Image (tube, rainbow over all chains, first blue to last red; front, side, top):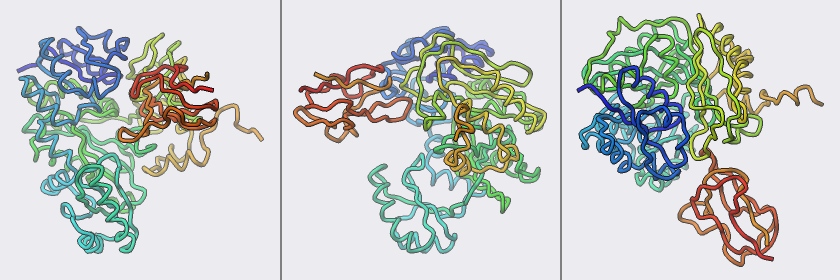
Length: 460
Length: 78
């Protein structure tokens, strides 16, 4: 059943992005919004828009009943969840399916399975995907933890089986530390998640974050190559690239093949991303988790492969077979995306939800901007600070960085403070230019004062 | 009578977390710099500090209410 009317259960730049692909496919769009989001660009551009509740996300964008009611009311036959909010809620996917509509994503069962870290790891091992050496499944006692840690080798990371977002993670360098930390971690996991189950993994020092974009139609699956997202602040990606130039061709191929094997083994449908840690010294990659949705950084993969991943996920979830065989999907050049957040990078990244007084976007071949701004728009304070993404595609990585620097200097968002100066400083940094970064690199770089406001440079 | 205003637009909270008591109750002494609430702006929590001393009278903004920059959040007497 091809989709005819798609409800977009999201906001901001990704809502605008989804509408663009829907329109290209001749699909009508229904945009939901909160009371605080009535002026947003996605509302103006949609065929229909429905208010689903107050500003607070819990009462609007996270309110499953309100979203389903809006979909029924408008006669939508499909729902696209975007990223964040309800995108990885199995309950939401189930509610959409129970209402007789298409959920643009995998089945509720797949979301549930891949959203549980232990279950996802087991699925990876079954599919032959390397995982970080660690406990086989959950551990219930401290004695078990100490015995297993001896086998996998210190330092070990202690994680809550039901956890997420880094909560409850501890690193133990030896058995004594593990003995004192494990009970704390158990108590914390029980309090936070109602589940005191733990698991252990070897802690990889200074890893790179590499991920593979996949797409499945329920029976077959393909990859759109890898991305590197090692530049992170507070576990949030700030700068993403496709491909990962630290990988040799053989490693790249086996990495991407492993992602496809896992996607096929779970009968994956829609767009997904498998995240890995890459240990450069050992030239080894380890699966860490799967995101069962489109990601913020999908444009870099689109740029190097010349594809529209959002359109493809809508098509396959509407029942079509994959548009591409693996051989059809080729990559050229190198792409970089930077996230422009409404934050003051010179004031500890303090949020800055101002009113846009003027806009100037970069132009030219291989330059793309995904955003939801217009002159006069008041950025609401209730949601994420991401306001735009500048994406460039160059002949190689050095060319892409040069293009990015040019694009950023041509970008002006009047009335807001943004993270543009951070990205300009990163473009000019020799370590970034050499690609010698890892996930623990950016925060110490910021702490060391590499990012200075222009007027204070050279001051006594 | 002094009012304490929101330094930023966002969502106001007068409790440190849903299960705790409010930061201040009627009759409490308030010193300059005391935290009287939190404003959540773009997923970041900013402490709202009193810029005047006095005796706490009441919150005038509801817990979890959307507020604008400069909006009155609480009143002090004396």
